[in-house]
Image (cartoon, one colour):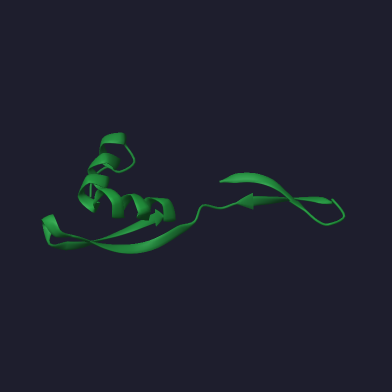
Length: 69
C-alpha cells in the first residue's frame, strides 16, 4: 500500500491511499486434481496465465511468499 495526495482542480491536496488490485480467485491445479483458492493481484493472474499455476506456486514457495499449497 502506498500513500499519496488527491489533487483537486484548485490544487488542494488531501491524503489518499493506493490499494493493490486484489481478487479472490479459484484456480484448478491439474497435478493434484483439486481447486486452490488464492487472493492474487491482476499482475499475478497474468503471471499464472504465462507460466502456469504449478510453476508460479513453486516459485512463490521458493521465494517465501507461501509456506505451502
